[in-house]
Length: 88
Image 1: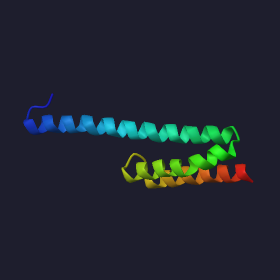
Image 2 (image 1 turned 30 degrees about the vertical axis):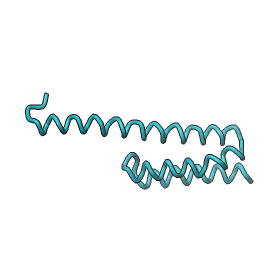
Image 3 (image 1 turned 90 degrees about the vertical axis):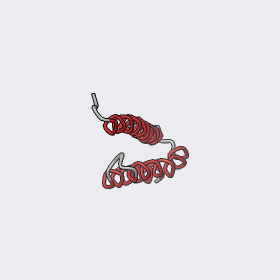
Image 4 (image 1 turned 180 degrees about the vertical axis):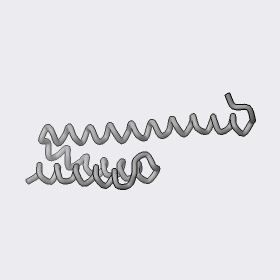
């Protein structure tokens, strides 16, 4: 256990940040899953509606460091290609 007041404070901060990061990562994964389900179900309308919302969640996750910038770009690229192919 932490021995100093500053170390105790760091423990508290880490616990709070871990919880926030966990919620954000879960939100990201759920949004991507919903998007993939819509694509798998070949539901063009739902996929089109979810695309900007999903991109927003991905961008915010990359901005806050939940995922890396290139990972975000890769997710967005693959999802966009699949939606585009679905619409065609």
